[in-house]
Structures are given as C-alpha cells and as structure tokens.
Length: 122
Image (cartoon, rainbow, N blue to C red; front, side, top):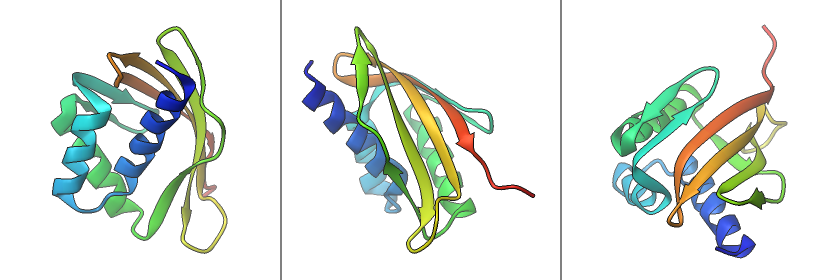
C-alpha cells in the first residue's frame, strides 16, 4: 500500500466522522474499517462497525455543526499509521485537537487509538 492510498484511507476516515446521513456514514464505515475493527480514545470506545457507527453518531450529537479536519500528513510504516486532526465549528478555532494511531489490515483500518492533544477547559 502506498502513502497515497493511506492518505485516501485517512481522508475517508475523517469524512466518516463528518457524515451525518446514517446510510452514507455506514457505507463509509464499510469502506474504511475491517469487520471486527475497534476504536479507543480517553473518552469512548467503539467495537465493530455498528459500534463505531453509534460512537460517531454520539459525537455528532454532542458537537452539532462541528467538523473534523486532518491537520497533518499521514505518517506510516509497516501496518501502522498516524496523523493529527482537529474538531472545530464552521467558523472558529478548534475545540479539540488530537493524534490518531491506526493499524491497517488489507487496506482498511483494523484499530485506531486516539489521543487528545488539546481539550476545552472548564
């Protein structure tokens, strides 16, 4: 797998976080994640495609009108990748910033572990 393919995979992953239509989001999840995939960060966990879908929907409900953006290049070696992202309202500074580390299997994400680099105070 080339870096371009990994960048495309990560960009589909970011698009999944932003997709509010459930049918389109589940189609993205099927393209991005393996069947038994998992996501874990300090605040939540999603197991399997349905668990990931429910997790993303919950984030969208908590942060309506916010969008995820990739803020770094995708760095990769072997079956691992990492990149930085932010969550911000359409106009305004980022509310949350983070770094995700993923494991790739057959061109899809098998696991992602997220770390928060910036969180709102209060």
